[in-house]
Amino acid sequence: MPTLLIVSAVILCVSLVFSLYRQVQMFQQNSYFPSRYSKWVYGSFNMEVTFLSFGFCLNSFLLFQKAYLLSVIFCGIILAVRAVLAVNTYKKSIKKLVFTARVKRFTAVSVAVLVILLSVMTLSDNILVPKILFTVLEMLCFISPLFLLVIWLITAPMEKAISSHYINDAKKILKNNPQITVIGITGSFGKTTTKFILNRILSEKFNTVCTPQSFNTPMGVVRTVRGDIKPNTQIFICEMGAKKNGDIKEICDIAHPKYGIITSVGAQHLDTFGSIDNVFNTKFELANEVAKNGGLTFINAESEDIASRYDKGDKTLVLFGGNSDYRAENIVRNSFGSNFDLVLKDKRIPVSTKLLGLHSIYDILAAAAISFNLGVDENSIRVAVSSLKPTEHRLELKSYINGSLLIDDAYNSNPVGCLEAVRTLGAFENYKKVIITPGLIELGKKEYDANYSLGLEAAKYCDIIILVGQNRSKPMMDAINTTDFNKDNVFVVSSFKEAMEVYTPKADKNSVVLLENDLPDNYLN
Image 1 (tube, helix red, strand yellow):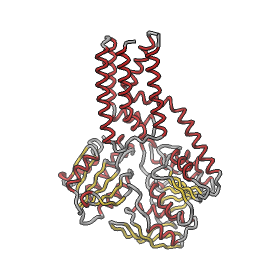
Image 2 (spheres, one colour):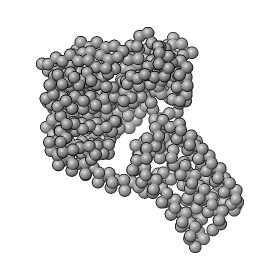
Image 3 (cartoon, helix red, strand yellow):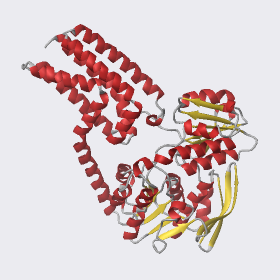
Image 4 (cartoon, one colour):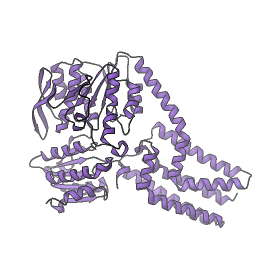
């Protein structure tokens, strides 16, 4: 086995390690689903794959001609390029790779596979084996998405076994604590904010635990149960996310909720759901489980897609909003919050909140309705609501650059919430109003129309519009171009860093900027 051939193989393996940072980062941002990762590769990494495939062919040709030194040089160039790209990716990434236990296992298996291939190739006495293995190794090293998928196939059984162990452990913990009342919260939007509001109100009377941040997957729920549930826990509030049919049921099979809140049904993740009907049926998997457990599910009467579909005769479903027994009246809103009356059956509770946006009122209403049913008194509800703080990155008002104000709505990615956020920005009278947004995603056939509507709303309320993503911004630009909005105040940039370079010189104490939907790296283009 020529020494230079082995050197080429080692250099390629090292270059693959650099390339894998980006690949694993995107695999993680696509929730470790090969289909979604492959879609990203096809949409955003296809040129690189084409180039790397050409590199594989060129290097194979060099080796076929026994030009081993040229192969070493060429592989060295690939290593240098990948190292530079890896550093730049790390610096520019909005959402960096999180080195979870799963990523560490993935990395360990990747290194082990490379070491085994190199060792067998180097030590084998058979003439054909090293050549075959080098060809395989060379292909995997050049075309890193292919290597990632191979490692995923190798690790999938192990990951499934580990997940099953953790799930069974979480189920056992909940079963051994029968005094715990589990409340499930789902919806196309509003579930995270509602969760934290509910936790704040219920904590006035009970020992509560809720899933942190945006933890709403089966393993996020399992992690919370295993880490936070204690013998004195009385309430477990469980956020439940979904991107396809069966996702909510999977979490329900772990947590078995006695109560539920469905905040909304709408055009969200339609690229995986396919239709609003599928979204509705999936969200109502929570209601089905709650009914089976003899409990009540509170559903939003203000959501048209709920109101037009739910079973009016189902006594386990309780409406909030609209003209129901649980509603908000006498709403007075301003730039820094709102005052209104919470009507909870025969009780009327005047409350004030610093939370922005009309949809925040309905989030409060949902949490107050279920808290009232669980025995929290009127004064406790009033005190809890008055003390509410914005959920991180959801209409969160902050001081910002050059004395300006920031409305941080980076985690809002639904059509209704985005339009309401722009209207909230519009309520800041006598301020220069700026929006920075890449638009909305995962809305299937409705994505263009939703972004078009966002563009129209931005043109109506904003003074300066900064759109992120040369391709993503087209529907919004199409909408803006139909208005008389001053086109000199519209900027299209390629990244949030560039957006801030545009905004910073314009920012002053009389400016307010709305950061609407800070997309992760796998969606920006």
